[in-house]
Length: 157
Image (tube, rainbow, N blue to C red):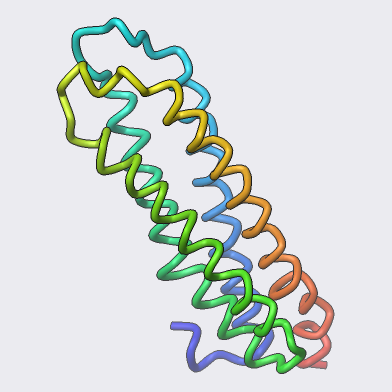
């Protein structure tokens, strides 16, 4: 879709995609915070945990397969060196993703209350990783997208 666009159209399309993705991030944060209220003595895992796991995998997947790809394409098109920064940060996101997917795999489909034994510790660790992830993603957005705002608008002038 964005492959045959002008620089300005590409920037605008990537901007819209990022905005939708950040709205999904906010929803995920709200759902994450609600998980802190899960009772570890409960007999079953709540549906809210399964719903969170789904939005977590959707968010992480959208980042890897849509947003990061388009940011990298945009950076390469502007040829300002920002793609090098992204390539240095992407391995950190991949490691972070592995831990998020482990959380997902452990809790998404399980109905066994014994899974809640270390839940608070796992949730806390995931929270730390998500915070780091958001910082890296925000840096990618600033360096590879927001920095091009003026260049994109002046390319059509």
